[in-house]
Length: 286
Image 1: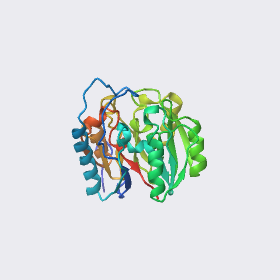
Image 2 (image 1 turned 180 degrees about the horizontal axis):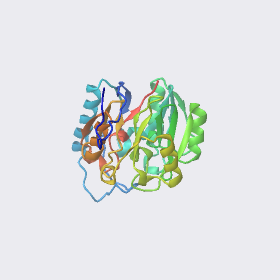
Image 3 (image 1 turned 90 degrees about the vertical axis):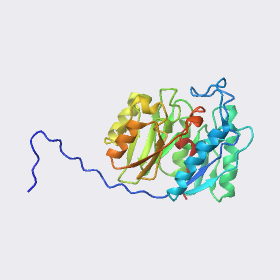
């Protein structure tokens, strides 16, 4: 007979976490630098170190290969310093690649480059009619796609993706310019249908969006401003292993408490362009 002593905290039963190897697309930051400003993180007056960015990116790629991921590479193109942020290159589901159409002129050539890669690799490419920045603003959680708007992707792209994918697309409005893409403010920890689990920064969303998140994901991890400010939420999970910014220490603690295995990496140089782990990672779902 088991007893709970008076005053003792009841033990919370956490689901057993299971990792599933992923297939991802990455782009080596051979041309990374900050020469323009299209988000609050970027400052062309601050020096950048391309060689350091490459070394840090290589560390991330090694983490993925050590986890058994299939890591595909797209060739970087001179003059496109943000191409390293592969997540923005499209959204791939059921072998369909919904292409990106970027807000700012500086990044617009990336859209066709990624679509060319998708075609060459046998994906069915859906050329976008509306402005969208791929997995930066589209995150699959179970059978639902959470879709961000407010700074980059147009709301009309949400309906377009719903038609293309045949999935339920739920719109969320971002209100803090520091978190201009959904994947900087929300992380998918478990995308398995029936086990959906996320983490997010409440202050990045408007009140109607928060109401949606609270209703759909009552057990979500809420991340503090300090961890969000190093793009701690810009992470990538296989359902058990969660690759995060090494400086997001409280988020790391919470992940362990929820049964995950957080793996910290340092992408501080790429943070100067406004990107982190997830920005460098586009999931390929055949």
